Amino acid sequence: MTKSKPVERRLADRDGLAALSVHLREEYFQGGNLVDSPDMQRSTSDITVAQSPWFAIRTRSRHEQVVQQQLERKPVEAFLPTFARWSRWKDRRKKVIWPLFPGYCFARFSSEHRLGVLRCSGVISIVSFDGAPAPIAPHEIDDIRRLVDTDFLYDPCPLIREGMMVELVHGPLKGVVGRLIRKGTRARLVLAVNLIGRAVSVEVDASDVKAY
Image (cartoon, rainbow, N blue to C red; front, side, top):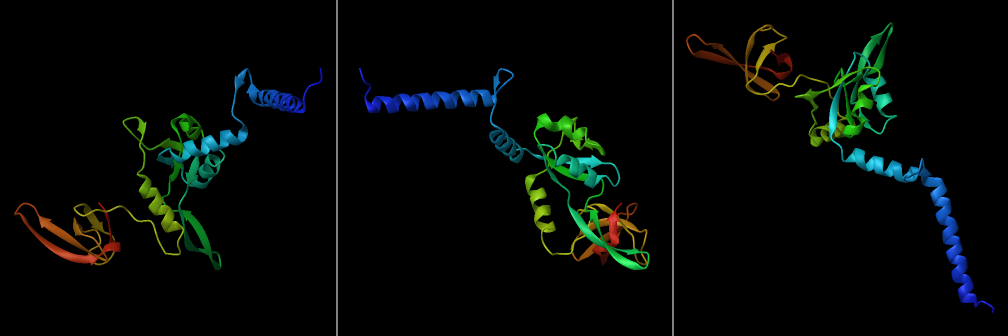
């Protein structure tokens, strides 16, 4: 009996699918386990990283960039914000790139890669609370990234909030300590004599104060 052409085509298609199936099994069966293709593995890893929280990585002094380079070779998203500063270099001025937050690099990774991050040369620790890595609010990292991508001039500064005790570091009142009650272009400093419950306030330049 002669097989009809439609049957022959169906058998050929079936045989082709069988061959493709064998090929896939040979390519993606490793150690007796079915694994995803390399492209699918990378895609899954990227999705996992994008859904992971950001953490602050404490580094040894002047090792921020070294740590960043190592993290970028792992399934980790690394972020090292920097700023430019002009420095005198012998007989000329040179533009030098410095870490915006010395001693820190930021990374986004899943818990399974925590040990790999800690093993990077130059890493001291992951900033943690109660023994667990402390996640950073995503919008804080996003805001810093938006800033460093602009042409605005920016510099690192201590985090000072209203109500904190601050010290004047410049001017005729250098060394004076008081409580910050307003922050802006100008800051208002309250100097108190607590024993008698009296105080006086003075307006100073916000750049002249630091956390006490």
